[in-house]
Length: 94
Image 1 (cartoon, rainbow, N blue to C red):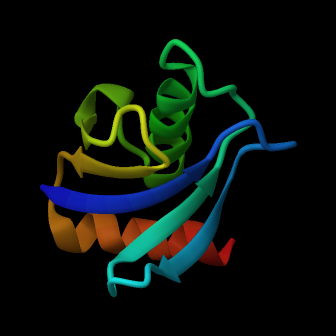
Image 2 (cartoon, rainbow, N blue to C red):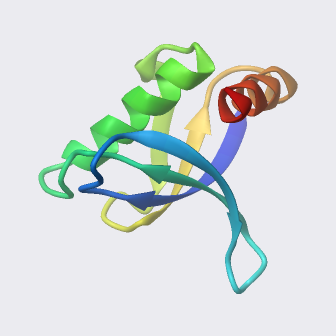
Image 3 (cartoon, rainbow, N blue to C red):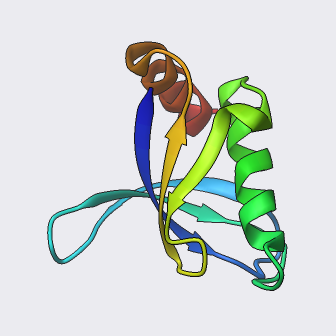
């Protein structure tokens, strides 16, 4: 299981995973932009689909555990942490 901290920008021109950023408190967050608007859970669904596609997992294996209505989110992703981190690194370099 992998806990992943995100900074999400909804309403972008296109959906994409941009890379890492460090918050002022030192938390490393993956920066993600999604085209979906931040209303009625549409942006959260778009984030889950984008990451599921990038990591090669089913959307049901990803859960927003913190920050459902915030730009700062924490997700839990089912799978081995090492494998998921490797897949994430590959997605960021392509």
